[in-house]
Structures are given as structure tokens and as C-alpha cells.
Amino acid sequence: MRIAIYPGTFDPVTLGHLDIINRATKLFDKLIIGVAQDTGKNTVFDIDERLNLVKNQVAQMANVEVKSFSGLLVNFAKKENCCTIIRGIRVISDFEYEFQLSLMNKKLAPELETVFLMTSSDYLFLSSSVIKQVSSLGGCIEGLVPADVAKALYKKLKSNK
Ligand code: COA
Image (cartoon, rainbow, N blue to C red; front, side, top):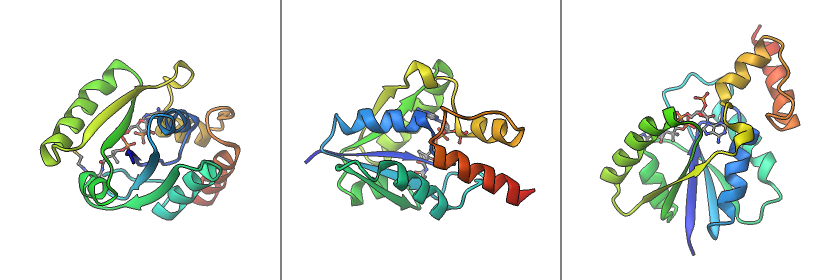
């Protein structure tokens, strides 16, 4: 059984992430989506909210599990018997950071491979931060995040005001 992990902050999950998730499920027997607690980012949604928003999107997918983790990604990946880390690459500027991340992970756990999937052209410009900024300034995020994520985001932004 070949198990892959797709790690991220998912603050919040976007259609860009879901595109990577959909494609990764076709390449592996099982995909674990690892929602990270320790990313150094100041998140809008807490860990349970991020976890549940991702869970809602993949509830119908048979070979996908969503779990939160703290500490090093490689330790969690090994505990879950994963052989591969999946990362999405959008633009060339992602590459340097992703290269560093994958080399560090390789140093920590040589048995784990990182596989990069190119983000679909529809989502090249997308990031969770852009979504949060646009929605906080009243812009439309339809077609960029699932409808319930947009709803949760507007609610959160309202309560934070
Ligand atoms: N579609 C849409 N958005 C995408 C995307 C895609 N296909 N691919 C990436 N993004 C966005 C993400 O939403 C994120 O946006 P944000 O910065 O606005 O939040 C950004 O691009 C990628 O951010 P990045 O910091 O590269 O990744 P991440 O936050 O998703 O995940 C972890 C980082 C969790 C993988 C990393 O912090 C980690 O491994 N943490 C655990 C601790 C650890 O092991 N550290 C040592 C690592 S060597």
C-alpha cells in the first residue's frame, strides 16, 4: 500500500489545494492530508477549524484521510507509514523554498521522497493569504474556495472586526 502525505497550513483550504488533492489520490493508494499546527504562521482559523474545513471537502473521497499534526512533518509521515510527501508548485518563485524544504526533509528522513505536482493554470495565482486579503477587503472569492469555506471566512472576518 503506497501512502502519500499532502501537508499544509490550509488557512483556509482552497480550490487550488483540492485540485492537488484530487490528482494525488489517483497516484497513490491512500492520501493523508496533514494539517500542520507548527508552521510559524499567524492563522485566521484555529487547528480544529482548519481540520474540519478540509474534512468537509474530502468526505466523499474513499482513499483520503485528514489529520492534524504537530512537530516535524517527517516524524508524522513516518508514523503514518507514508513513503511520499506531495507538494504543489505554482510559479518558479515557489521552487527555491520548496527545494530547501524537500532537501531538509530528505536530510531528516532519507527514506521519504517529495513529489511535486504542478498547480493547474486556473489556480496559479492563488494562495490562502490572497484569499484572506481579498475577502477582508470585500472582494469576490467565488470559484476560488469551496462555498462553505467562503461562508466560514466571511463569518470569521466579521467576528474579528
Ligand atoms: N493552490 C493554492 N494555494 C497553494 C497551492 C495550490 N496548489 N500550493 C501552495 N499554496 C499556497 C498555500 O495556501 C500557502 O499560502 P499562504 O502562504 O498564504 O498560507 C502557500 O501557498 C504555501 O505556503 P507554505 O508555507 O509553502 O506551505 P504551507 O503553509 O502550505 O505548509 C508546511 C508548510 C506545513 C509543509 C511546513 O511548514 C511544515 O512541514 N511544517 C511542519 C514542521 C516541520 O517539519 N518543519 C521543517 C520543514 S523542513
